[in-house]
Image 1 (cartoon, rainbow, N blue to C red):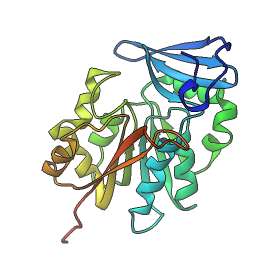
Image 2 (image 1 turned 90 degrees about the horizontal axis):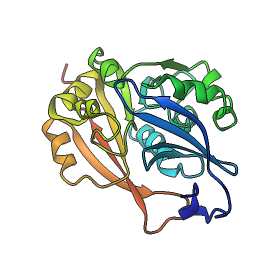
Image 3 (image 1 turned 90 degrees about the vertical axis):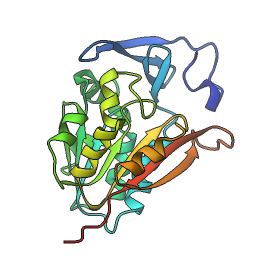
Length: 238
């Protein structure tokens, strides 16, 4: 299917070019596709990120920051994608913040500096940004009271579509690990392309106060929505 056809009525005569293929550690592949001036990162037939549909990915950062007491502190982003969540985080957080992006697939970082460099602009050169080519699960598991916000967009929702190992992020003990990695009143935000009924209760069982929000899947959408859970760690009593 032509990239962005649903949202922007792309020219159906545009051909789709495979720009590059990335091996996923542990198995599977991602494809970077191009149609006209639009790019897409796909896993099989599933589009994980498109260059023209990124309203909800930006909302993942901006709405999280709005739920914090201040705009300083340390932010962890799981998944680099096309950099839209990172860009929104840079705009939302203060010059004193630090933003760590954990990206599992090395070629995603290469694409950001190569065929997608015009999409990323100068985001990766911002002094607040550090890139860790690692599984975000491992970064979370190694942290304790470190992050003010953890933003997860590593799959199409709270399951292991791309990697079965991603289930570790969303299972009960994975969510408790995220709880421990957050500072008091820190926020875990999880993006999803679908509602995942019952996931809010799983977050609550891990100790979080939970708010679920629907956001437009693309600019101007009135009937196609993505979903974000904002899970807040309880305030410290110390």
